[in-house]
Amino acid sequence: MELNVKIKLTRGATLPTYATDGSAAMDLRAALEGGTLTVAPGERVRVPTGIAVSTGRSDVVAIVAARSGLGTKYGICLANGIGVIDSDYRGEISVSLLNTSSDSFTVHDGDRIAQLMFMPVYAARLTACDELDSTARGEGGFGSTGIG
Image 1 (spheres, rainbow, N blue to C red):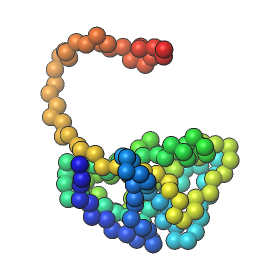
Image 2: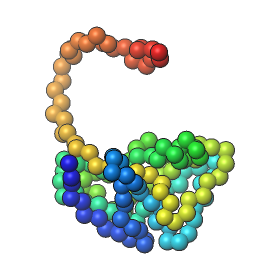
Image 3: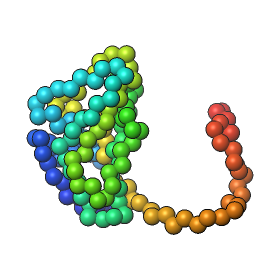
Image 4: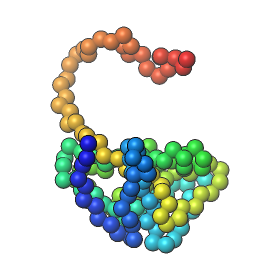
């Protein structure tokens, strides 16, 4: 499935790209205009990407997700878990990085810092009720299905 997306580039940014034919998300790069940014242990920083997007559709959301290699190898994750870019937002996309390691991490201009994917949105119509339908799981939550 394809989606036409308009993209505005600033700060010397380049078009995001998919790393492979099977990639679900495209790489977002730091747009630091030739500079670097150091993220100290435990610090959160906002990294500009130099891009703004428009799908022209209210039923699509852009999602900013972490890059697994940054988290696993360097302890760099998204400070907000995921980023939700609403369909009517037209500003520059920034990535909020959090350093969970005990070492400083330096972001260079052009480094791949996150991923951007586009997903459908369902507008929920809520109906108040006294009871929900039953399932085998029921109200079993945290750890109720075990680990093995």
